Amino acid sequence: MGDKTALITGGATGIGRRTALQLAAEGINLIINYRNSKIEAEELVAEITKRYHTKNICIKGDITQYEDCENIVSQAMNVFSSIDIIVHNAGPYISERKKMADYEIHEWNYMINGNLNAVFYLSNLLIPSMRKRKWGRIITVGFDRVESAPGWIYRSAFAAAKSGLASLTKTLALEEAEYGITVNMVCPGDIIGDWKEKAIEEARNEHDSSVPVGRPGTGEDISRVISFLANDHSSFITGSIIPITGGKDVLGKIYREK
Image (tube, rainbow, N blue to C red; front, side, top):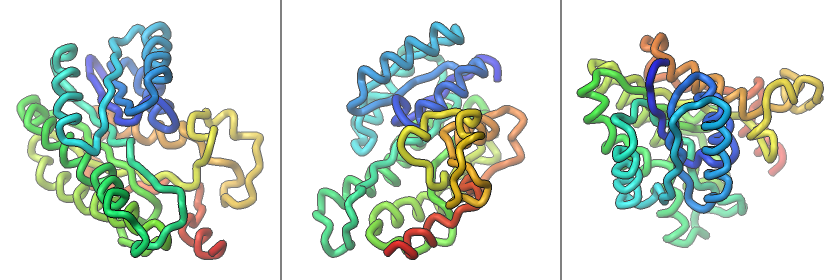
């Protein structure tokens, strides 16, 4: 990958952490954004710096706030000459089963800002410099079948924001193709708990009958695809929505359990 730098939002824990380890192993410098996980972010930076000898920093910031996004980029540019890759990993999610009519306005705004507007904020701040360098990789995160704008009961704000993001991903891909910038979305399946930070090898001997491939999904399943999309040789892949689900129908499972 050469001397590239990636910004991963929500990169201290979960799939973000696994992605950081994957990209660092390929020699990519990292900016780990976090909101509350300061200790985890600092420990991750120390670990990957020691293991891979890349240049890495962590920056606190709430991506739902434009001013925080400005600050994240400003602090990063004090250390690095460019931000070449952005992984829009962070995305608030309310686990409580709640119908749209029961949302508080601040809950709705938080979900829309964190899952849709934040991608506008950071992409808007970073795309101009990517254009100048004629190279960039923007990777967003959705959910299975998001490109069809499906209904998702009790997840109205999250589903609406991510469906909008799928359209935005495809639009940006068209708008920025001439500048060597690719824009794609990865859609994780039902990857839960500790599995978000685990390696594929750890899942090989674990059986999960709810997944057609027969094993749990891991953070590495997602990070490998992100790494592939970020590669210099992946320049022909843009505007793609890529499901990584092990064949499981995640929304179908939800309706069956309703």
